[in-house]
Image 1 (cartoon, rainbow, N blue to C red):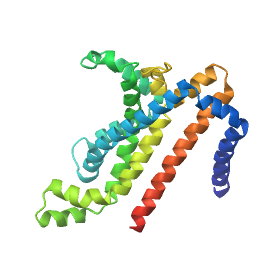
Image 2: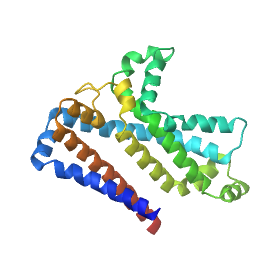
Image 3: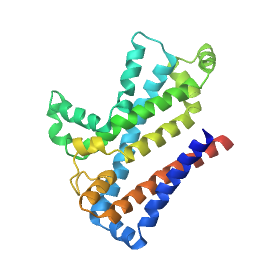
Image 4: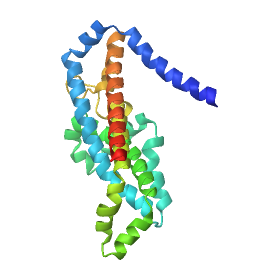
Length: 249
């Protein structure tokens, strides 16, 4: 098992190094200076941030409810929340596309489907499921006794949450946000189906990789891939650094 784990780690490292080895600095500069790629980068940063914020707004209350309360049909709700995780990403995009053919969603399809909001929504539908799961685990690790003490001291449920539980869940919130952002950055299937891959309109970094590959520009494709690797690594390093600061504090 240890050998297999070591092999997995080495394979990940070799894959990343292979990308860097195949792409020269000149190709990287040329690709990243193209207006289409710069637009793709800006849209990716904006959409990932928006979808992450939306995911956290949803994940905190749902994660808390699923962690602290028991109700009829809870297992069904739990299974529904996990559907975006187990569904093939392409199916998520197709389902969104079909959904916006029915009322009341079809009233908004003109402004959503194959537009920038579709990019954010497609990312949100998948990323939010991971954020919910992370926040539930985070709340599970906080003893219920802390809330019970706060309630006996005169706090209501809302005050106990914001004053006692939420401050202790900040590391979980950071983990959920990091996971949601990274998942949004790598989302491809739902975006391709639901938002399309129109350059200078709905193109994000994963679809840029696809378009560069379609045009036969392998070095351009790898240049965008390296940019995505760098962004993901930066987010993970920042999250770990902030987490360490909280621990030391």
